[in-house]
Structure formats: structure tokens, C-alpha cells
Amino acid sequence: MQELPNGKRSASPFTNRVPYAPGLTTKRPATASAAVQLSATKRISRSEACPCGSSMRFRDCCGRIGHGAEATRVDIAAQHECLGRIRRAGELLLRGESRRAAAALAGLQPGDVTQAAIALDTADILLECNNTAAALPWAKRAVDLSLGSPVAVARYDECCALLKRRETRQGEARLIGSVLARINARAGSPRHRLRERKVHIVGKLDNIGGSERRALNLYRTLSKREVPVTLWSTVAVRPEFAREFPVRGISPESTPNGGVLALISTYFDCPWLNSSAFERIVVCHNLADHNRTLLSKLEQIESNPAAPLVRLTFPSRMFRRYMDLPGQVQYSPVDLGHFRRQRPPARRERLAVGRHARQSVAKFHPNDPAFCRELLRRGYDVKLLGGAAIAEAFTGDANPLPQLLPVGDVDARTFLEGLDVFVYRKHPHAVETGGTTIMEAMAMSLPVIVFGEDCGIAELISDGQNGFLVDTEAQALQVLDSLRTDASLARRIGSAARETIERVMQQQSSTLTDFYLD
Image 1 (tube, one colour):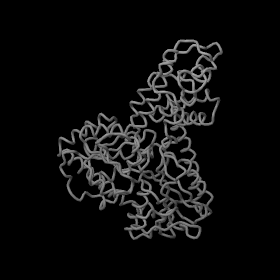
Image 2 (spheres, rainbow, N blue to C red):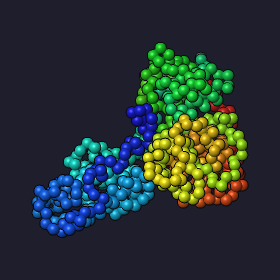
Image 3 (cartoon, rainbow, N blue to C red):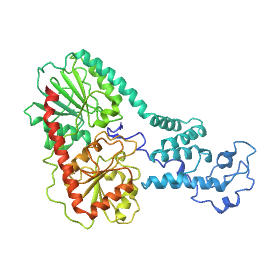
Image 4 (cartoon, rainbow, N blue to C red):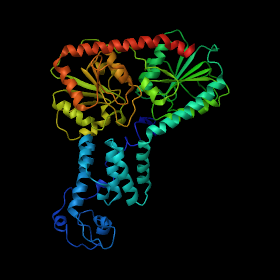
């Protein structure tokens, strides 16, 4: 994940970019005109209008492929076929058909195009289809054709960064580890008794998402232990959170101070972090692309004269291994009393399949709209809370349509009560370090189907026992068909899912207070 200007987080820099944008919106016709077809092999003056219909001169358009003044013959038909396939891939991607979009581009080469904008569009499409290696030469072609335009260079750098992402993160983790070691060496013994047994929980509570849920649920858990706990927000708090929790706003006149600080993620500013007299600081590192913001927070803490001890927590064993840093695994606390099914699932003719998540395209796979269409075709109802983020992909579709609800339109527990099966898949460029929404669905006794790659909570699922782990849409469809025909299987898996979350929460709750205060 990475921070966006509006404070939200996305899986990668391009998940909020329209992938099919500049070059394919020219007046070029979708198919070759009769004039173009007739002129496919005729000699054309380089100063004439290009017969492909682009309104450009031939020498600046299709005539560029010869790279020389003598090149006056061009296979216009082949050029149109190439451009038509790229245009088709862009249209498919806008409809959430990433698999078909990638197939439309199969076999094309960067040298097949002569306009930088077209090469750039193709790189964008391939990036969204999770084929970064194939996108790189197209981005390089855009750089060459545009003579190094900043946009093309930025896209090329983006491809390179993605291909080196794991190596980069490992280097960042080593730097984090060295700063953390210096801080704790200065802090001295971790066994000293706290002078002030109180906890400050700090988050950015203006949205609905995993970090926000973690902060609220941690407050709910610790406040039951007769420990003085204060819940803080770095920004104006979301109204429904303010109604349920005693949230304090941070301001220059009112900041956390003393005792223990629990910092829930690091994507918000904390100008008081280098001066408030904390004895211990616990930093929840739960976003894969926020190593640099974590490092920035640690550098602030290192300059704090109070010399607090610092510990890290991770939302899954998977992410702790990924980072290779010291710290404790703490799954996001789940309110088991709230997330409990109030009535048994109704036996419906059409099973309701869906999920809830932060309203961001980063939380969806680029082929999810196509998958939803297949579910509808097979007779399932599809409900997505947070699905308004992909609503445009269904523009022009005939009924039936998926139910796409904005986040906050309905309470998460109420929404889950209306599902029969929970299916989770993310954007392929994202690392789902935890997966609070999956745990909430399991607590609701729902059978969950999880695409397990780079998903932390997948480690709590034993395939076929308390949920299902799949790699492909075909596997997910096979599991869904089994659940539809075998109601007892759905009940057994859902019951085991609830038992798993109860056990994990019980084990974790018994040590949580000691971790923060002992």
C-alpha cells in the first residue's frame, strides 16, 4: 500500500490511474476505412494526411515505422490490426475483463507502434493486468518515441520499481532494524517497571478500513482490563466512531503523553512523537508499502529525549517473515459479541456471495467484474460492500447486476448477515498483510473462500476444514458449486471458522495486556 494525497492508501501508484487514457482517445477509427484499405500498399507522400484517419501527417504517424525518408510504403492494415487490438484491450480492461485484455495483447511487440501515447497506454494496460515484465519494454518504447517525456520516464521507472519491489523492501527492512536496535540500546532494559500504567492508542479515524478497525478493537479489548486507555485520532473523527467510542482529537494543545503509546500504522503525521515523554512505544506495522513512513517515525522517536523502548507488531506471521524484523504477531482483535450470526442462514434458491472492504480499487482484482458476471450467470446473487469503487465497470450491462454498496451504507455485521459465502481477492500488486474483514466473516460463521497469495489471514485457514484457499477463479467456482449443493458442508465450514476465530482471540487476549504494560 502507499499513501495518496487524500490520505487513503492504494496498492500501487497506478491503481487509481485510468489505464486506458491518452493515446487511444484519438479520432482514429475502430476499423480501417475503405481509403486506408485501398492505400495499404500505394506510395504516399510523407507530407500528406495519414490515411489511417489520425488527422496527423503520414511522416508523423504510420510513416514513422520506416525510420527514414525513403520509407514511403507501409502496411497500413497491419498497423490498424495492432492499434485495434490495443484499443480492444483497453476497452476490456475498463469493463474489468483483465484476462481477456491480456489475451488481446498477446503477440504484439513494442516495435509495432509508432506513437508514444499508444505505447504508454499498452504499458498501463499490461501493468493493470499484472504483467509488469511485459509492460517494461512498452514503457521503454514510449520513452524512446517521446524523446524522454516525464510521463513516459515515470512509467518506465514505475515498472522497474515494481520488478525490484521485494529487494527494495528487504533493504528498507534492514535499515529499519538498525535504527530500531539503536533506539532500544539507548532505552536500556525492557524489564523496567512502568511509572505510568496507561495506554494511548493513536490512529487516523476518519475512514472505514483495517487500520481503523484495529485501533477501535484494541481500545475495546484493553479498556475491559481496568487499564486507563485513551483513544486518539490525528484528524476529525468519523461520526459513527465518535458515537460509539470516546475519541479525543489531537491538537497542538492536546497530545498523547506518558505511559505507553500504541501507534496504529504510520501513514499519518505525528509532530509530537519526538517530544512526548512516553516510556514505551508499540508501532503496528501493517502496510507493506509503508517502510519509509515507519523509518521516519523511528527517526523521530530516536530524537526523543525520553528514550522510550520501541516494539513492533505485525498483523500476521506471513508479514513478519516478509519483513524479517523482530516483533510480535497480533491479529486484529475482532468483537466476537458483535460479529455473531443472529439467525441461521436462510435456505435460498440463489446463494448470496460477496464481501466487504475499503472502498478502493486497490482492494479489487482487475478481473473481479468479469468474475462477478460469471457468478451472476451461474445463478448467484453478488453483493459487495465497498463495491462502488468498481461500479463503472458495469456501465451498460444488462440485468442481473451485482449489488454494489458504498462503504458506510450498511453496518458490516448486518451486511455479512445477508451473505451465504464470503469470497476475498485483492489487487495482485497489493500485499494483504492481515485481513480483518476475512476474520469478521469467519466470526459470522460464514464459509470463506480466499485467494491466498500474499494474504496474511490465509495462514489461519485450513483448506476444506474451516474455509477454502484457492488460486484461480475456476477453483473458487468449483467450491461455490459444492457449497450450493451441500448445505451441511456450508454449515460445517462456517461453524469451524467461528471456532477458529474464537480460539485465536482467546489466546491473544490473555497476553495482550501484559504485552503493552508488563
